[in-house]
Length: 84
Image (tube, rainbow, N blue to C red; front, side):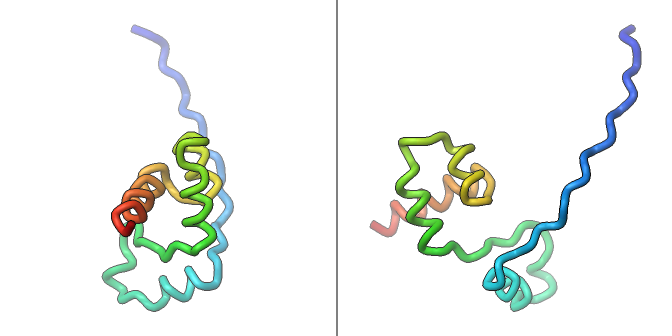
């Protein structure tokens, strides 16, 4: 049986400071809708960055630049493509 390792403490993460428009959007939601990970509005700049980066960069890098998860970036890309 392998030796038991002591678990490492998780790194402390600084609180996230939301953009004013996102904070206002989240504050406008009913209390029930605030559980989980609610969708936030995308800006035109984020959409442009996403569209310009697809095919040139990895999904992980694109998502990091925008500040969303990889799956969220992919979902938004599919939404934008469906609008065309």
